[in-house]
Image (cartoon, rainbow, N blue to C red; front, top):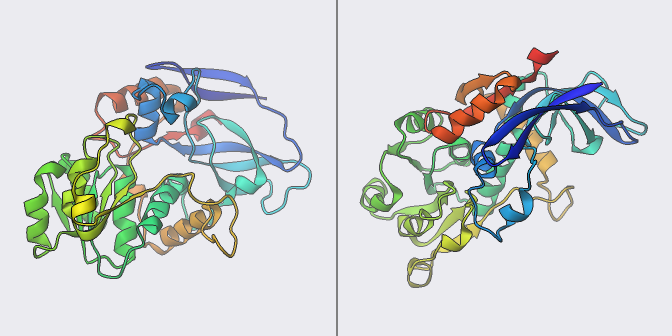
Length: 337
């Protein structure tokens, strides 16, 4: 059996590669993908090699490089000793964009009947956002600023709304993104730069500024503009991973006003839940599915583009040219069945 995979052959070069499906070993499952979600910020950085030498990106991205880490598929074969999932089950799996994937069964999370393929494919991005919200340690009634209304920003807006935020202020230069944020829980939107938003945020919060400010842009120049938006002893949560971390800088707000900087990354949660660290990726995925099934989180209406995987070069060309009009971009692998 062969599989068709998406591959970054070199910088700015997207190709399709066909090869044999690996054998299914003990404890593994073979999954035929149904849909996968592009993590547009991360994958465009990898494709364009938009990062500084010596960074963790430089260690990670070597060509040829296979992108992707958030997909939904059907189990078509199970190896010896597999428990928890069975042939025919729909599962969420953190695998690359490809027609088939062999993965350890413990990394697959069953998808409830009430959750569509299109929604379930957001699970890994939803876990990244959920981890950031946990790291912020919110309190009921927080005023929150979200800088960057891309995929992660849209998810953070919804999570902090669920946590009982008082005001959720989304900042982004793209009106289309702000309209989506407003439809999904943002109480206020600002189509201005974060560096010009201090007065507006102050007006909206009665002069207090924000309890928590999220920088979800991946733009190194944004971090120093985030600190002045936080109130005294507030927090700045850095979620957008930039390709040039040495260009990010602190401001006097950290010392003078006691603003705390907190970082969040997909590698923070433990692989398995324990009494001391309950919220693993598995548990956060299941919670995300619960919220989607209840209608408390909506992501399917954030999907702006669906592509045949064979159109991958065009999909990435669109994203690297201008991401402002795109939100959820998915590959539909069922067209290859």
